Image 1 (cartoon, rainbow, N blue to C red):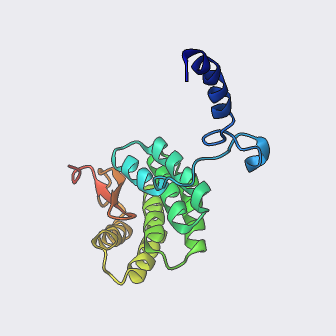
Image 2 (image 1 turned 135 degrees about the vertical axis):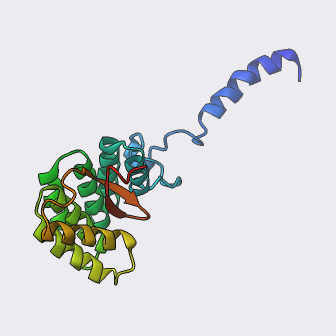
Length: 190
């Protein structure tokens, strides 16, 4: 093959290569439109896990967004509702947190973290009697296994018996383990 043949063959090979559909849009797939959504071959990161890490880092607004993303991917379940309620509590949205956590306990009456987190909201809003009742439910469902729920119940009972108890202490929600939360006074915080 001479130089002149290569000059003529070059554009012909390029034209044939352009006809190859590998890597391009296939008019039969997606109706000729660009693909939508994200690739299904890659596994996405669990929004709940990311949200829990953001909560631990004190990034409550970002955690809430991550939990809402988890809801859109997994659907609204008790785990997601409990997490969204806890993020709202940290953001000071006590009414929203209480409403969402009540929905979580209605959705699954046997999920101790949702009951515990509802108890935390009730403590924050000064509803100590109901908080102690809610912590009792969480404690019974958990079979007394969780030290966090046990501590919350003890605190709520002490507060019911003596409303002045630990009035000078501020309480906050802290994530412990896979979805458990507890109240810590500022004196106990690291």
